[in-house]
Amino acid sequence: MCGIAGFCGNPANWKENIERMNKRMYHRGPDSGGIWANEDASVVLGHRRLSIVDLSENGVQPMQSASGRYMCVFNGEIYNYRKLRDRLLAEKKVTAFRSTSDTEVLLEAFEAYGVKETIKQCKGMFAIALFDKKTGKLTLIRDRIGEKPLYYGFVNGHFVFASDIGCFRVLDDFHNDVDTKVLQLYFIHGYIPAPYSIYQNIYKLDAGCMLELDAPYKEPKVSTYWSVRKAAKYGQAHLFAGSRQEAAEELERLLKASISEQMIADVPVGAFLSAGIDSSTVVALMQAQSKRKVRSFTIGMDNPEYNEAAYAKEIAKHLGTDHIELYITAQDAKDVIPKLSWIFGEPFADSSQIPTYLVSQMTREHVTVSLSGDGGDELFCGYTSYSSINRIWGKMRRYPYGIRKLVSQLLIGNPLIKNNQVLQTKAYLLGAKSPENLYELSNAQEASNLHIALEKETYPYKHNSAPYGDIKDVQNSIMLMDMEVYHPDDILVKVDRAAMAVSLETRVPMLDKDVVEFAWTIPMAYKKQGDKGKLILRDILYKYVPQNMMERPKKGFSIPITQWLLTPALREWAEALLDPQLIRQQGILNADEVQRIWRDFVENKNWRIQIWYLLMFQSWQCTQNHLLA
Image (cartoon, rainbow, N blue to C red; front, side, top):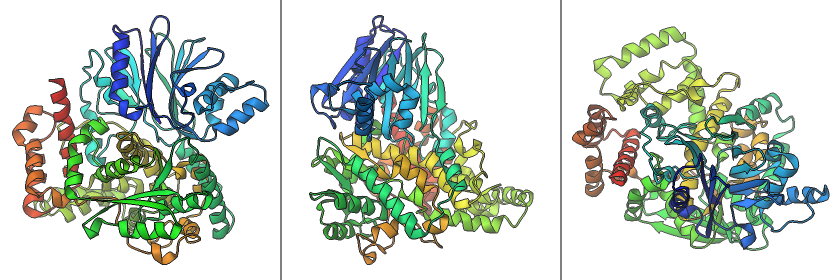
């Protein structure tokens, strides 16, 4: 796990600029750092290292291939690098390796098989920058699901890239304005979907994509080498034909293989453990394959509505892990809030970012790598929203779209229900034209939330531009939407940024390529019956943990933010950020709409998740303006 950065075009003060970029992402790699530039400094690479595999100097980056043709900076892990290394040796493509690092294996594979063929063979999480000295081509590559971040774009006419969007702000002549066309998307989701970022001319390289750039480094070409949509369509067209038990056995085999590879490291490894199905399955399969006690970590809260620590402790005791827990106070969580703008670099408003940071901070005191159970809900139909959308659409589809749309518009404009949030939401959803559109609208909650930003123009993105309907099953289609947008742009961003802020590497076994592709072949009846999801994961887990330990209502990984915002200190903080005069002065948000939403919460206790979205946006904006001052 590391951080990478670089730029092209021979800007003045190139050395000072790359050193500042490296310093900005020091937390991603505190063990060492390095820089490299070609002869005319038209291509410059930077790297910060968190040593995981091969802790020696032989593993430092930027790294050059044995022939001298390629230079590489690499963030992440290639989990099957040992198999790739053995193949290179067996085929005599390489006579010997200088190190035991996956970076060297990656470089020699590029040399032997070519870039595209090598990436097809790699299983892992990665963001790679590769410079070919022979052709002058710079190639950026991001992993299939989007575990590792990679931003790119242009600053003052120069092509730039980095693991951390904050790296761009330290460059000379950074004046990229806020891209107000992303704000409507942000206030729907609480994050900015790829390929966009908060800044004009700065983008996220999408999951499963490769960017190629030739001299003079002005026209990047982006292509897709793997697509979760294609994997889902193929899987749905080739459903697993065996029994549910046979499917569970195959999934268990794949998960064990994934976990076994992801437990490999030259530093201590542990795992996050909540009381949920996903993390419990990962920890159970880790312990089943480990000769030593697996280290497991959880945090608890005094508020019983949000606390699963006691259940996690019970599961850990049954599995025999070396379990560590930390009970956090409201003040612990509140103290994290001022750090969030710096940690995430752009507006990001999933409030579970706070406990994620705290559990990462505790975990880093004991291990350098932690496995997580993320991905189980999106791959094995765990969210209740999937069955809700299926049920609601089943009722709505009985009526013609034209009639529903007309009724929706009439109701939304009706002053009699203007202040009734529940009726407003129902009226808004009534205008959905497909189950996918219904899910998209449900994220916005109500039409008024689309008017928080003054800019009304917005960008197309996967939710409103993909050819929905090519997967017929409603729940599978909604799961795919989450795997394309919510999972990479919210869940994986949250985990990566919060963990890397304390220099902790996180790994996600359920996102292994073979696991993901097999998951899409599993019939829905093996995943969900009624409102009970993740059946096939339960089949695996109950071999290791008694069923009665797991049959509890899910609390989620959250904090009581709605209660805290009404306490004097946080309410004062919030009202300072949402001050109408400040918002009008900034000229980006609709001050009247913001005040209406806030007053409705304070006076009527009507909570909208957009309140936290607003606070995180304003906190970010005020922090950035202060830094520029």
